[in-house]
Image 1: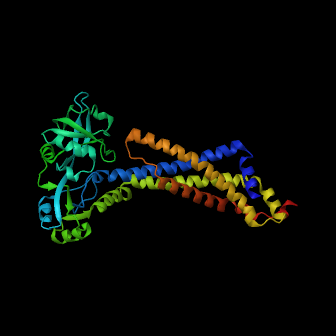
Image 2: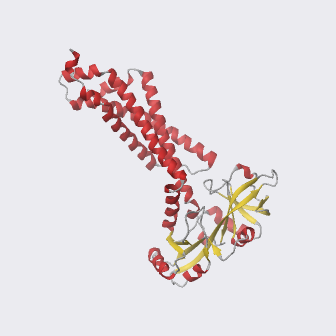
Image 3: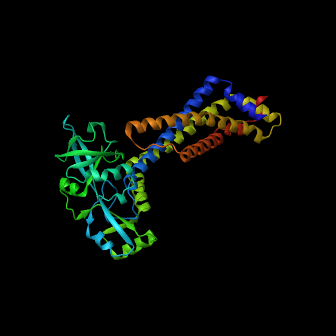
Length: 375
């Protein structure tokens, strides 16, 4: 019986119900957006390392994240090969640079990646197929997700990197908007020549272990034989460390996490205001139900079902809007924005918690209502 009562209470004033649903849906959409940005930033932070196929990584002891990787001596990779479990290794190097579009004369910040030309270490099919195209001097692969200010990124076009003319011989998709406007990949020989960095100093060493060897056990052996000026991570640890640092320490991650909390609080306040107003207008009716002998569970159930209806009617439109907005944001910014089932379920759970909190606050007036006050 209380289900029809709750439904009639919600839809008695359709304009007010629509306004309430719109406000709550907006707050739920904000939660989706903040989580989307948070997840996108996390994915982007570890995207580079996910493009490579390796078991262990070696970095400097002063390593923080990709934007400040520091360098270590190349000899450490040679020393690592003492272990029979190590099958092979490559190195990856990063430097800031400058891109100049010769047509517009515009200069943009750039991240320059130098890689060992070993296809076996590369997972990304576009980068793997482009390895043979960057063996010659002054050739690069360009990230098509780079800022539009980079100009025409057509294969075969000549541009300037660090005031040197280079030829675009291939393309790939990465997106490093969290760190720079764009990036290029070149061979390590080209990298050290264009950046003038000492080739004995490396940013990352990627190692593969022989079949049957345990990467975790090999990591412990490496930590015992290598000097303290380097750190050793498994592939999963390296990706997680990069993501955790960026999300937990860098301001962008903290802002997005705070945004989720703020959006949730906004939703609770809006839903509480809707319930509080509706309950305040119907206190006499609730008092009458008490006088007629209906128990508290029945009476509170009306408010709970109203809150649940508002939450459900708000969640699904917000879910649809979030799907559209995620695609628009990705198209404009190239940030990896994926509305996963796990995220949808998490926000749905938050909507239910929002409903519970609002009910507890909104039903206090009903609890204190005295039927005697009607007479």
